[in-house]
Image (cartoon, rainbow, N blue to C red; front, side, top):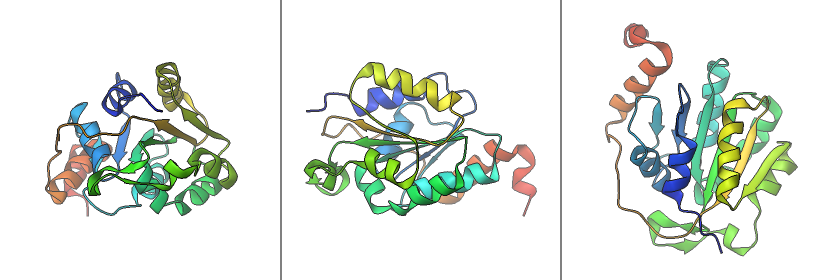
Amino acid sequence: MATLDRRDVVRELLRDRGELLVVAGLGASAWDITAAGDVAQNFPLWGGMGGAAMLGLGLVLAQPARRVLVITGDGEMLMGLGALCTIAVQKPANLAVVVLDNEHYSETGGQETATRHGVDLAAIARGAGIADARQVTEAAGVAALRQDIHASAAPLFAVVKVAAGNHPLVLPPREGAYLTARFREAVLGPAAHHQL
């Protein structure tokens, strides 16, 4: 049974993050990155379930000099498994995808996901061709993962097993246009809002 706390995991992954860009899947992942600090380099998804990893891939392809971390949940990743194949083929050196796996759909009532019944997302990622695909169940593994997010020279995929249960909501801004403009300026600089 997983005992890692998702908020503690995210807080550690984002500690001393520097210029790391972070895309969060909808729901708890977005609340978790916001609880660790609402900054312009965060792009929390309020919708579009299944799209977080692909959004991260598009971002690294457009910004090959920037490191990008996608933080999402097991339900969201299960909905977007095809992204793992595309990431493996593209081989972006600057992309890490971290799945906070509590084996439940937390946002819709706690129904069990397929990972509760033996589906191994890290094995699926390896099968797709992502060589560094791991499962993390202890705090020491989270610390090592944090270092690798900043230093890896190949795509990285990690499933972090976290305890089920919800935390108090820490909501990011709700306005999509604001989040987009803020993130765009963080990526492209202050003149970004003048570019078409």
